[in-house]
Length: 212
Image (cartoon, rainbow, N blue to C red; front, top):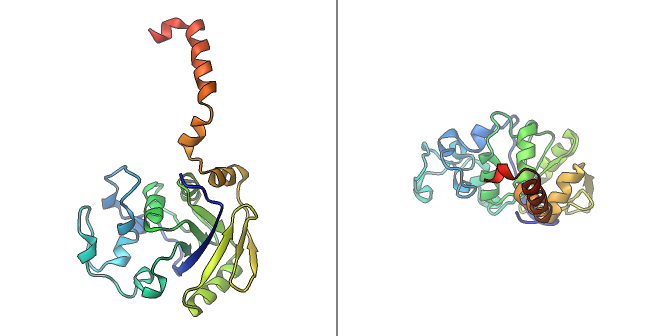
């Protein structure tokens, strides 16, 4: 997992509440358990005018020009600004896979569904919760200013606007440490390889019949 220390990113506003995981990545794309390849189908039913299925050539599918991700001014955005209860619905881990596959590293919203939030941290995405008033201000600024960017400083836990205004956000200390050091569940386990081996050797001596 890539480390997340700081970023300076283009912001795209998704002005919808209660965006569920089926909207983030529709159910027909859940057949694969690989972590890659889901980006082109992020928000598939909103991005395209036809019905998407796995294996389709997305480069020739008709785009919904009204959908925010298809607007040229937001091309290359890697910070998603959203409304309350983002990521609700089923607990599919494919949702953060699709978001990161598109290029997002940060999602800023007033609230997130708990399981989705945990899945984001486990997959290198930083979900930032700010109060509704601050989110409203950011939506106004982003929509009024083409090329609007934000700086994210995870160590200081702040979002910095182009004018220098800062928004402080809370983040669990364990999750923060994992992001700063690029540690997913496998990475965390590998930190204790020597201890695991020592335990296995002791277990073999005490209970050798388990290893026959």
